[in-house]
Amino acid sequence: MMTALLIAMLTGITIWWLLVQRLKTKPWTEQGGIPGSQDSLTSSAPKVGLWVFLAMVTSLFLVFVGAYIMRKDHGHGGGMHVWVPVDDPNILWLNTVLLVLASAALQHATLRIRSNDIAAARRTFAAGGMLTVLFLAGQVSAWLELSSTGLYTVESPAYSFFILLTAVHGLHLVGGLIVLARAALRMLGADTSNAVVTSRLAMSVELCTTYWHFLLLVWLGLFWLLLST
Image (tube, rainbow, N blue to C red; front, side, top):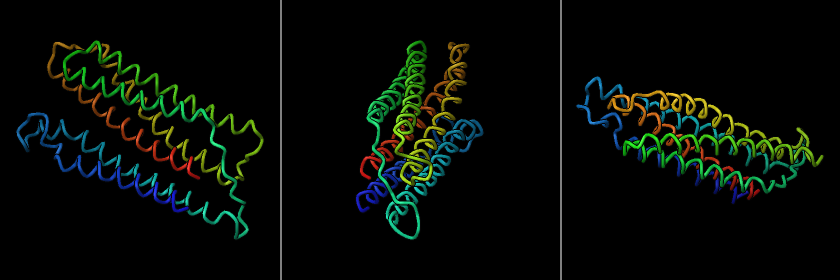
């Protein structure tokens, strides 16, 4: 119980610290525009919006983690179903590596597009998307593996929480993939000789990268929680 609670607290504190540090940099004054100008505000709005959204998602996951810990702590009384720990599938380790690689690929794409190497950015951006799809396929495989054992049902609280936590995380990645696919399509048909177009593409890639780093951090916290309980 204490170990799981400590994990949840550390994960939450780490994510909130990153959010606060990012907002302290005043992203609305970036992009080389004149502070307070319409162009500067317009270009920074997506960044501010993303970080506000990440703060909301952080709160959502902290609520789920808190419910997970409390349910586990009361798993043997009150007429509730007994808490039977889930034997986490080994494929979760591979899935974690895939998501780490996906996040690294998007980071590389951000660096490449900042260097105006659009071709390399396209390749690594696409690689990040494919690695994410493989991660999601691996998560589904983990669900099927647990289901095939016949040891867990929807009435099993530990199993239900396993599905809930991994599914909610996966849905956030699916939403990210939709945005990533749209950005990738813009990269394919973009006029890279146009500085404004390139700047907008760089912004899209950077936002996707930030989102992936965030969901990687969330997954590492969830994975640690699942392994420890």
